[in-house]
Length: 125
Image 1 (spheres, rainbow, N blue to C red):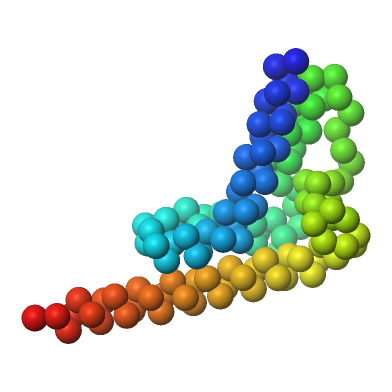
Image 2 (image 1 turned 30 degrees about the vertical axis):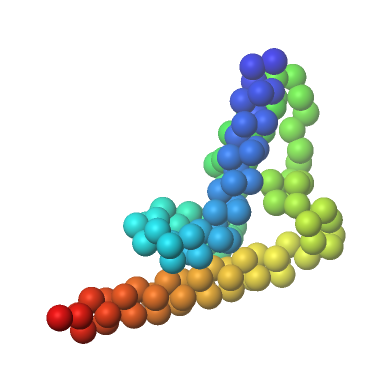
């Protein structure tokens, strides 16, 4: 029972990390120090996608599911929980590209806002 609860907790945290990956740059517009956490999550996700290795968070969830007596899903977290539910079946590569594009847009906005703030501080008497 404990392992199943822990597996569910890891699943929720994993989902939250994915949401943070997509919107974290926008949150950093308001809370600039957050950008370091956003960068870490972005590099982490980029490495997983580019190097095509399994996510350790997914491996942890599957491990906990096995320990709890459940049969873990065969695919990755995104394919299991999101593909065919949030976007059409098989569109995960497109969703990844959109996610990274949103991330880039949020970073560009972050640096534009940061530059404007610094310019205002410098221009103020």
